[in-house]
Amino acid sequence: MAQMSWSVSVQISGGPSIAASAAPQSVEATDRVAVTIAAGESDRVVELQPGAAAAIRLILIQSSRYGPNLSVKASDGVTDSESVILDGPQVLTAGTTALLGVAPRQLKVSNASADQDAVIEVFIARDATPG
Image (cartoon, rainbow, N blue to C red; front, side, top):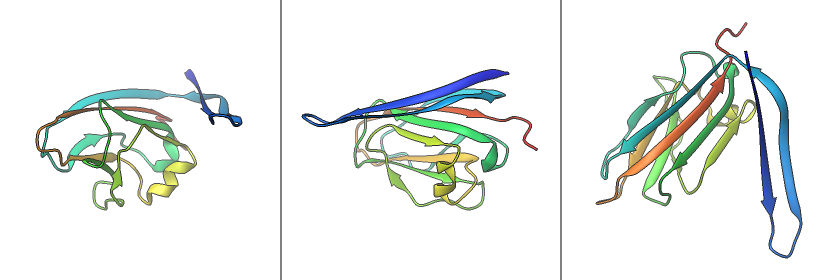
């Protein structure tokens, strides 16, 4: 079984530095998906994981470019979450995945740009045998 940890550091110019981290935790499965979302493409499905939301330890979503033309929403395969503008890297930890409102089995990515493709990279760490 692999061990995963994460950390985030924020530096405010002329102000404080803030850091957060998680102690190493066991994860049974990790996946990395990189997919090109063509200009004008809507609701491109990226499969994340087959299990319950409680199995997820981390989801990281990053892109080759960011801005108001890129959006992402989570889906349990039937119901979609609200769409969110991909304006920077997104990190969802075990507890924050509940904010999506659905068990994130898929992401649906849209690129409203008329002429610029985007490469979306998703990393997910999860428990493969929840119980």
